[in-house]
Amino acid sequence: MGRSGLARRWARAGVALVLAGSSLSACAGHRDPPEAVVAQAPTKTLAARRAQVAVATPTGTLTGVLSPSAAGGTIGSHLVEPGAAAGSLPELLAASPYLAIDLVRGRTRVETYGGAEVRGHSTFRYDLDVSPADALGLAPEGRRPAIRALMAQMRSPTLFVDVWVDERGRLLRVQLPADPNEKRPGYLGGKLVAFVTVDLFGFQ
Image (cartoon, rainbow, N blue to C red):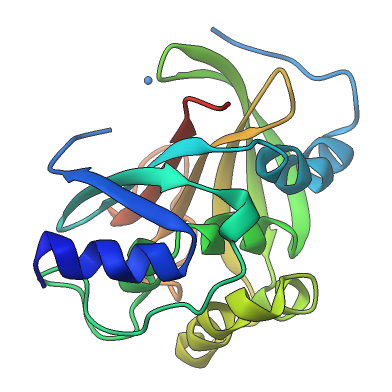
């Protein structure tokens, strides 16, 4: 699909396409308990009037502008990137990056990982287990089709998700396995896992 076609799909999900082909970095602590930080992060992130977003998949990177006030639109379901299987998690996230934020609401486990830098900003990373079924009931109606499409692919009730939260409690990065049935790799090595990374930056 060409850039103009992709722009139309993102517009229906509240995202305006800016360009393609960009690539996707201090430590920050939070005074609140990890569960509270992560619980509040989606709301604080979507409180912005707008923000830039970059979705890096195994086949390429898309960047655009997130407009939370328009986030309730219908989510596209057609192929948006070469190499992405129809209905795959990379495709769903490319069609609507809001899926990454909505999934965080369905966390079932929160574990603190440590400080890290994302695009020059201090953040704290948290490792999550997420239940899409729990997230479904908390998402706006217009964004639920993407969650249902993800659930249809899964053989387990949860998937692992990593998030990076800044000092203002906003999600700056959400990273998910490209295959939602992958298990979290061990920290000391093991199987290489392909990821989809959603970066949020330039908040206004």
